[in-house]
Image 1: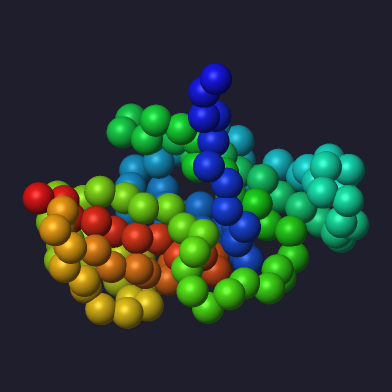
Image 2: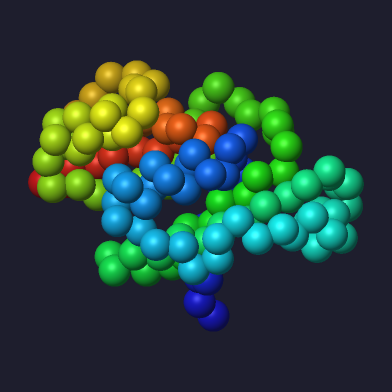
Length: 132
């Protein structure tokens, strides 16, 4: 058994994909393909349109999958997110802010390092972690 991809719903697949590719050097394996019929069959929920992208990078062991299927309600707590290890949290945050991200809270110190949640373009949350 192997993990093939990690998937998250986004409001704007183009904005999320652009941010993730620019911030982390990812490249599309699948680029905004229309999976409307398959999504409806698999989930039992009819949607007007559903797009899917899968992104990869040299340090990412599984594909990161983005799905845009209309405006889906989400909780305010970022329970669904991608987490990225970064060498310097402050530098990574500055770069993310230049690319349109905003902090959801404050940098938090844990035994293993510092961490912060960011809202990024496209309507999703990422976590940046500076591990010690």
